[in-house]
Image (cartoon, rainbow, N blue to C red; front, side, top):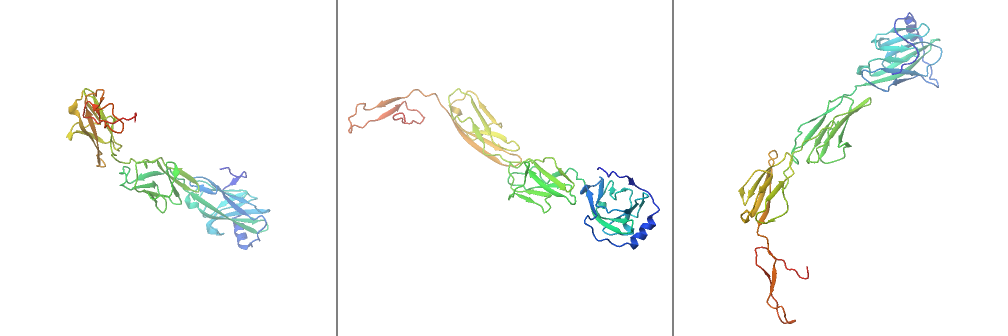
Length: 360
């Protein structure tokens, strides 16, 4: 803080008795156009910092000042007094050693505490024994520490577990604000804030609600934000898929199937072939397959934390490569509107046949 240029004074001066006499015999002046005012610099002080009660519109022909704690002149609440022409200052009953008075009447507080918050009265003595009084206010706030987020359950199950996030620590005269994905909260049925906004409850969470979550604390003198907080949301397994999409294979080919299901933690995989357990792997490989390998291939997935299971089935057919078919006809020269015609696709196989007419 930049202090006034006029020299500061501490110590004892012999004019204290005169000040007391003046204070008992003076009368109040009517307010002038430029009324005595007192400004706190800064307006909102931080505990441990310096604050100046800066005096504006001092009248002329001054003799002395007196500062008091509270909203009135009370000798028992005097902090310090100052005589201009000496110049000397005298500590009062409430002088703590942290106050410094300047020749322009301003009062500096060093290393302020929250106990310094309150009203302060300046009494100005003129050489003609008239006085004026100014009232100032000092507001001291804690310098906020970096907040942190605590959680009742950082590994919730999707659609099941509510989550309670709390912004710590709890401090007085502090407002709390939450951010999700760097955005302020929007009205939502799955979010609930406590009356002081310090606690955020999440309902019906999904895998997309991992975060980051941040809380911000603020008072008139400072603002701080927590580190990002993430949830590890447990879900799945979803319905598995088997790849590749091919279902028909030739004898002697290699069969390689892969099963995948979205899951957190990752799912455990196992296979059934025609209802019989096979291997517990995500990938299934059978070399040199034959017609005996035809059948149903079932992928089973299990999440050991959520306890959920899902399956999917794929039918695999192994058969010889088809020869080029030919069409047999009972009558290739039919008479219009009279002779029926029978077309037969040869040879007969276990595959399905699709008629083709005019390439359609």
